[in-house]
Length: 328
Ligand code: NAP
Ligand code: GDD
Image 1 (tube, rainbow, N blue to C red):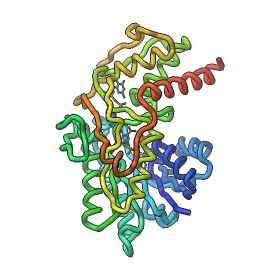
Image 2: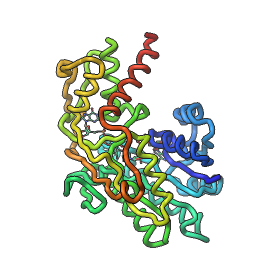
Image 3: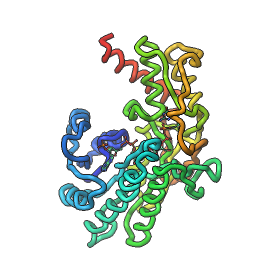
Image 4: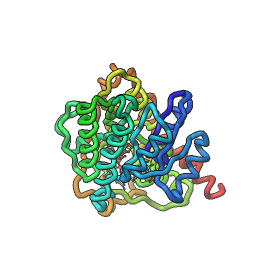
């Protein structure tokens, strides 16, 4: 039975990846921040077969202990402070967790695998946020990185450190440059979930309006369930490498609003949406659109859920949850 250790197990991708690996017969270990984590219960009830280990990416010895306990064949490093807007307010902490945390994870795997540098296959959760002020359209593995947020800068550090460990020590370390991916499990601070929650509440008469920032930014949005499959495929290759994972389509926040409101029968959303400068960012990533040709040809991966289905899935899930919460 293959074994996997996942950091960020309590997050959106951690849950989908653990589900996928369990369905493939893996023994799955989840690395989770320690004492009294409010998300422990979520993992325990959703995925009771996942074995939880406590630790923190800023604590090298806790990662080493987790490696000793789980003896994994594959290590998926999904843990990060991942909310871009927050990263300006907490730039140092974001750098420590999202940037230096990757170094800790790589170093722990290197120390643990001294007898055979490719004993543990390593996946790093890199991000399209690294493209920032985009230098080519669409963006692929060769596009120059130009991050526009402390989060993006920290991800660039982790990305290059992963490549450096692969080249320096012969580690099987791959980096997935994933474009935005969403789902009903997305945190409510991210724009897609913020909208799907608000739209469902507005349609049920539980909320009057919704405040947002920049409506003109464009993202290449896919479904998280499809994207974790790409992570797994990367670690099944004989040679480690870096891959862009994207739908190759771009849509604005306005287009997401169009589809989400139409889904509940509201044609004109303008009376319900307010723009609030509090949600504008000091520097914006205006346009993301990926070119995932390499992953499609080498990994045989392709996304299954398209943009309208993703929006419908998220609104339907929030409608059901809001009805349940309101006892409707
Ligand atoms: P998420 O829902 O925000 O989950 C982040 C996870 O990191 C949570 O489990 C969190 O645990 C954990 N974490 C935070 N600080 C930690 C620390 N100091 N030590 C250990 N774990 C820590 O993010 P996601 O959407 O699943 O994304 C997974 C990864 O992919 C992240 O690295 C993200 O930056 C990257 N990524 C995401 C996207 C996307 O569109 N979703 C795109 C590209 C890359 P707690 O529950 O304890 O906070
Ligand atoms: N969160 C949020 N809240 N975003 C808003 C809002 C709002 O009220 N109004 C407009 N936006 C715009 C943001 O300015 C941004 O241009 C876009 O919506 C998407 O914001 P997020 O959903 O917060 O995601 P992100 O693109 O900044 O970052 C996500 O994707 C990255 C990959 O490109 C995160 O998951 C990152 O961790 C990930 O690396």
